[in-house]
Length: 104
Image 1 (spheres, one colour):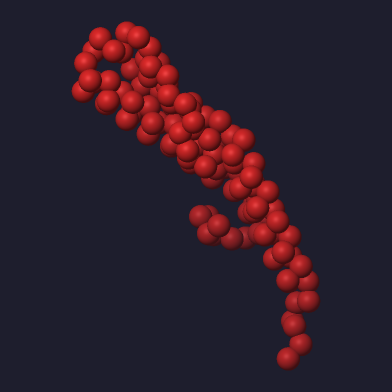
Image 2: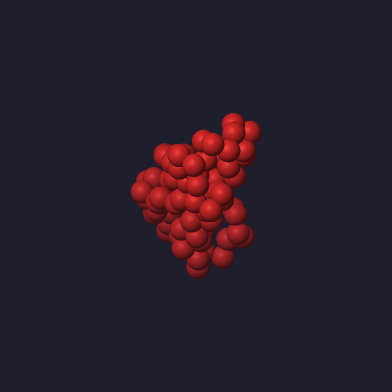
């Protein structure tokens, strides 16, 4: 049976290459989340990996429970921003393909 679309494999390979490049580029994205008015800041990359945590000395005086809440909130903020950036980049890749959102 002949292939109905001989260019389909080539197109799929090109898409794979673009996805691989995008995955690599996500590592270069940096976002910062914060909590407590900037008392705790967390930096993450486009792969949702935490790369840095900064805690202002004033936050240490508030006690361990509040500090842990601030760190958790700042981490969640950074991860959410990272997800949004990744989704925006993926949206650029899939824009014109007619694929449903979130498929890739």
